Amino acid sequence: MGQTDKRWLELTDAELVAQCQHDIGAFGEIVRRHQDFVYGAALRVVRNPTIAEDVAQEAFVRAYKALPEFRYESQVRSWLYRIATNLGLNAVTRRREFPQTELPEFRPEPSPERRVERVMLREHFDRAVQELSEDLRTPLVMREYEGMTYQQIADATGLPLNTVRTRILRARRALRSAMEAWR
Amino acid sequence: MRECGITDDRLFGFVDGLDETLDEHVAGCDECQTFLADLWIGEAPHDFTEPVLRQIRFDEFLVAAAKLGIDVLGAMGRAFIELSIESDDS
Image (cartoon, rainbow over all chains, first blue to last red; front, side, top):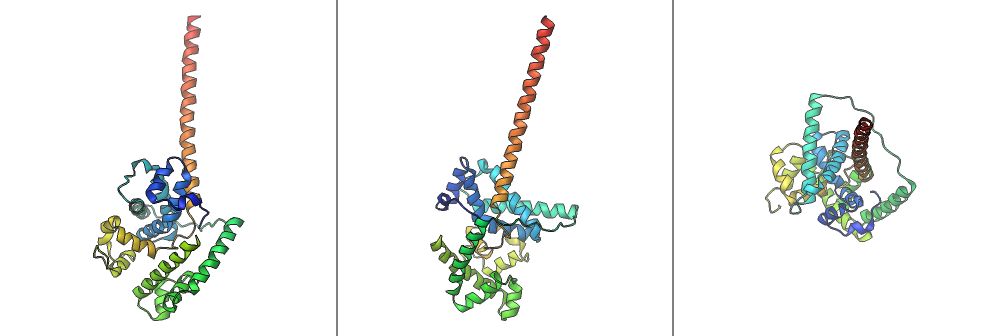
């Protein structure tokens, strides 16, 4: 995860939106907080990781430009979800109309500070993983450390697919609690 | 089971593209979104924060530059008209 300004961490989404008028850094925290969700929502619609990245990034840019229209009674996450889904549907339509050849992916190298931060996070993460019960740890390790798909994990463990998903979900929730304490 | 009545299995089907009937419900259901947010933890392939902020700053720069360009053109136009009037008077 990227470096983040500590003063934003305690704020709610709505408070961050209000802060965005004065400091774009607050919007950076909204991106950091919701990027997995927005990417997941985009990927569900477009079914292509490269296009989902573009859609997710564009969704945040559109959201920022539309901040003056944000109604505080609605949730920021719901608002982002709708923007990402609509952009995803547009991308799917465009892709059907104008099929394109995919370009190779470009991955920027992380800075030295970012690498150190990642190493520290990783160490803490590893310790938290060791404290999980075996039935949660095994599918999680397969997913996070070995990069296996849910289906591959189900095949390898003999567990039903949705049991795998549920266990990974529970493991992530337990880890999130552990990481919150560290943060 | 969530209060909204949608089961985990239905949401898994939704994620897999097998159940499109949940589109509108999920868009407005905080409980279902919380479940999906947990399911999708770590899914983003990299941190979008910097690319997004860079794009926003660049777009804002373009808007500001365009406004400045219009102002400069307007000022040049006004100066041209004033100079024309002055030369006509002389």
